[in-house]
Amino acid sequence: MSEGAVYTEAQMFLTTLALTQPRILAMCVMLPLFTRQVMPGMLRYGICAALGLILAPALSPEYAALDLQALDFLLIIAKEIFIGLVLGWMAAIPFWIFEAVGFVIDNQRGASMGAILNPATGSDSSPLGILFNQAYIVFFLVSGGFGLTLTMLYDSFLLWDLWHWTPALRAESVPLMLDQFSKLMRMTLLWASPAIIAMFLAELGLALASRFAPQLQVFFLAMPIKSALALLVLVLYMSTLFEYAYETNQGVSSILPFLNDQWWSP
Image 1 (tube, rainbow, N blue to C red):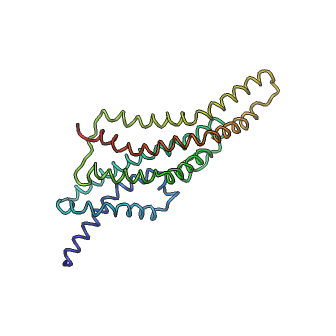
Image 2 (cartoon, one colour):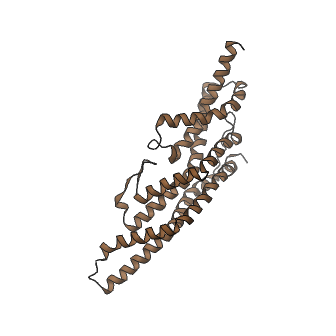
Image 3 (tube, rainbow, N blue to C red):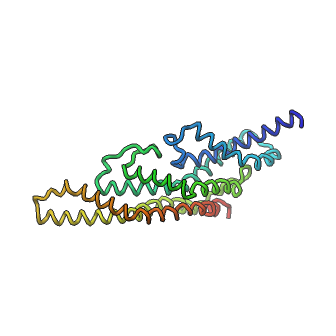
């Protein structure tokens, strides 16, 4: 093989590899696993490049048959970033649910004033919110969630081709996409409800006690009692909570069919 042919092959491979990165990087940016606080930039870029190495050999032959101009490359990059952000947003919802569960419980027990920086997301959260978020990250890795996410990423290149496909965005798809926010709130309140109900009953009991014993310092007793009850409920409820988390992990495989229905032209 001549030097010119080797150069051409290398150029096609590297160009294809570079064009796989917007989708991969955009998806990873949305996942708490790959935030700047958890994973340094060079390491994150290296992992994304390694993920793209698997795709480049399969995609580069088609690039050779195309005559792409600078504008075409810009449109491809914009389209790939859009797909990656949507995939990452859908895959990151369980992480946000778990953090929100901890935050809601802390808010109900009166500990939200102790908000601190969550290193996994870079935003303020409560102590239980950070604990739940980091616990779910570990569970996500050990339960096969990351493998399902990679499968979703690679299958997305089969459904939505790097070179030709453009999203067919329709007005009727907007409510279905926004329903994911509703799902986040529903699941947060549902998963946090056992602890919230226990704390509500404790607060109700303390309110009745203060009615009959005004000298009782209910304000100072409420937080430690509610905190103890919430932690007791969480200890008893944790195995069930992570069963729900496992089912949510398996739901990653339903993201592509859902998006495919929304993005293909009717």
